[in-house]
Image (cartoon, rainbow, N blue to C red):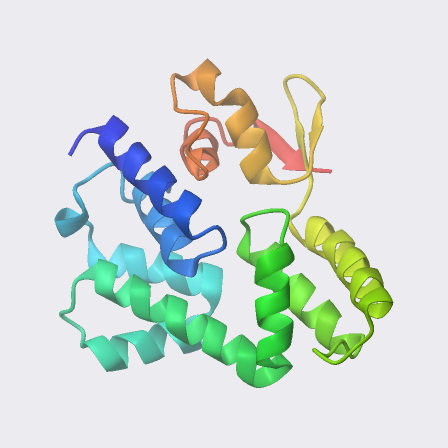
Length: 199
């Protein structure tokens, strides 16, 4: 599978599923450096599992492995992680908070969406809340989401970006990478670890 095809496939998945653990997991596994651009069937499962646990926590990943089996295809495991992560958030914060955050997220970043879920729940937003309250809570939750996405500064240009993903897309062409790939920052950080720093 060519690099361009992997990038196109990952970008296509992201455009269909804006905030998807599965699509982000594929991006992490394919562009994260530890896995390179190998065809999906050749992705080393143990390394992919480590990346998934580091990003989404051991609980959902272990549940996915228990469900799918240790010898399952990593793509199937990633799909199950997606299900368990959202189920875990819905159980803790309520389905309404999860669905509202996913529908209103400005960044396709799990940390940003999770911060929105927590904020929506903490502010007591319900489906029966007034339109005014919904607007106010969603607005403040978006601010928390942007903050959780971890702003970074490009050490080469001094430009500040709202997230590592945005920074990566902005400079991808300098590295000969596809700027439309939502996960291109993983490849950039591997090649140039000091390019971005926390803002």
